[in-house]
Amino acid sequence: MKLLFIFSLPRSGSTLLQRLLSVHPKISTAPEPWLLLPFCYATKSKGVFSEYDHGTGCNALSSLIYKLPNCQDDYYEALRQFVYHLYEKLSDENSVYFLDKTPRYYLIIQEIAKIFPDAKFIFLFRNPLQVLASVINTWHKGRFRLERNYMDLYLGPQLLAESYGLLQHRSTKILFDDLIDNPEKSLADIFGYLDLDYNPEILKNFHTKIFGGRLGDKEGYYKYDQIDSEVSQNWKNSISTKYRKKVFMKYISSLSPRTLQVFGYSHDQLQTLVEDIRPVRSGSFQDRFDILISNLFRIFEIPLFIRKVKVRLESGKSFVLHR
Image (cartoon, rainbow, N blue to C red):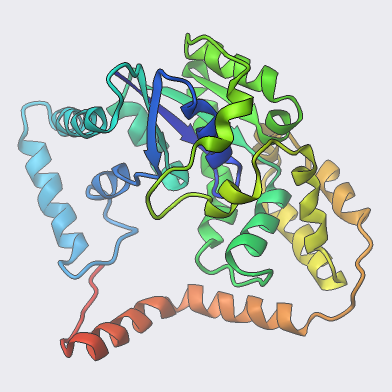
């Protein structure tokens, strides 16, 4: 069995692509495993808060890995065998690939490439404006409460583009707009990359694929039973005020030309798309307030404090988070 990964940002159409690919009898999958994130972050000194003091734990593990005969290679080999063992148990008997679709793997793409040198990678890129609008509307009911997705929107595009630049020789790239405008060609290209036969019946049967588990695009499961190219235009409805128009323009400016080029766009192209929109409302108080609160939550790590309070109230025990 081989491993297959979809690398993308959240809200980029990865669940749709996963459903399409999983119709093939040679591909098994599971909803957003997130399995590799904690194991890769176990050797990172930054990015984790924990009760057990992650900083000390990271130093201890790094010391242990250094004592192994082949150091990090031995750690990766053990991790590779562990992951293969679990995914084999989740796979159908005749599967050639197990597909892991976990959007935040953009944080550890380079580690995954080292751990699984024989794995196949599909990089899925979507118009960043569509991603921003989808995050706002799907997860935050149309509001700019983006503290939990700031990393996805501002760091994610850069990491995804940089990783593709380093791994494009062993990967395939697909644009979301191409997938929904011409799914037959996009899927034929992917299955050619995977050395699997493409059956057009996939487009008729993918809507029957509903994965269990807690994560994944549940809304999309029931909202779309066929591929609709109009979905690529829905993001424009999010720019309903002049202030929102400024926010979207500012977001475009935050992304580097190189990043946008890999995504298949340019600053001028995206700015023109936003400039052509005529807002229907003038109000901005709620959006300004949401952005202020979102920034405060993000900068001062307010969710961590809230978690401490909840644990204290629920269990009566003190709760300390360590870096």
